[in-house]
Amino acid sequence: MTDSVTFDTASPRFGLPLLFQGQAQKEIFVNEAHCRTDALLHCTIESVAAAPPLSPEDGKNWLVDTGATGDWENQDGRLACRQAGQWLFLLPRDGLRIFDLSAGQELFFVGSWKKAQIVQEPNGGTVVDSQARAAVTQMVSALQALGILPEA
Image (cartoon, rainbow, N blue to C red; front, side, top):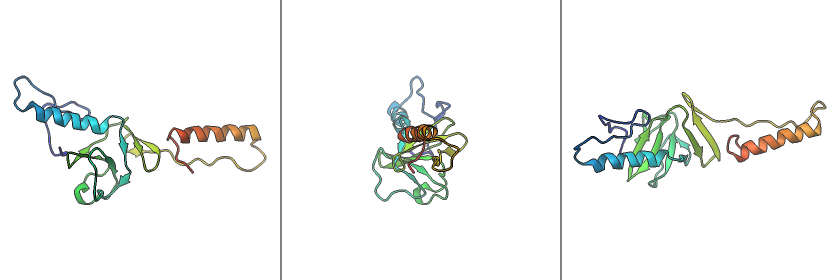
């Protein structure tokens, strides 16, 4: 269940192993496909980190930060998924969205991982009237509630 496992027949996007007629030990292929699907479906990560946690729990995911060390070395930018006591590393594809539980914010992948930055609310001057200021504040609050913008 590590990223080094490759299959002759696999789905094009996430490398889910495919079965072929008369195949022996189908359970290996099916279990690998289920583990990868389990890690990616409604994906959440515990945090972004460069080193693996000391006592990881199965079913938990992390986003591997640059300069990764230990078991995560050379896996920068991949999802590190703990499955059956081992690390499963998944290469992100354009359009993949994940939710960072530690930051309470969504990240998305388009060539690299991206996330929204903090937006400064209008708080001074004479140009912005109170109704416009209130509307901008409500929009920022709504985007924060959805995890699109981080909390200030």
